[in-house]
Length: 129
Image 1 (cartoon, rainbow, N blue to C red):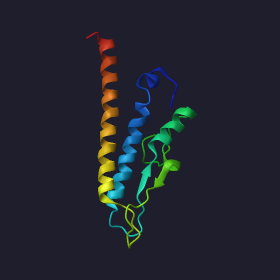
Image 2 (cartoon, rainbow, N blue to C red):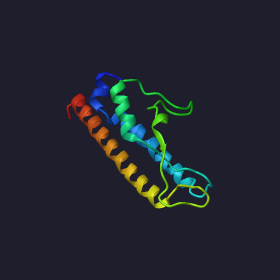
Image 3 (tube, rainbow, N blue to C red):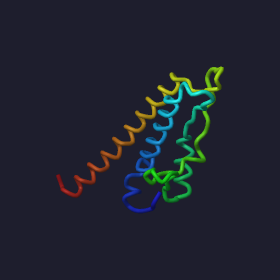
């Protein structure tokens, strides 16, 4: 994360928003592959990625040319253990994934709301209204 006034004004939420979006994409991918034999459910260790970025003070980077620049989550992606053994080797549990997606969406909205309030505050300071 950059050490400029804007980044420090928005705090961790500016970096958290794209990371939360990536986590939702991983969970959605799990749901999409619920019937794929030998597919292993994946997740992102949100806390570990954010902590790493905060400690390193490193600029955010993308993991694929099609991605918008963001935090490098590759090393913090892990396979989630299956709740119940499956004959085809798939570890996706639809109920667990839906619950994880719901929570991730709620966290995304919370970060977005925080950023919106910061922008509103900045606009109020600029316009005086």
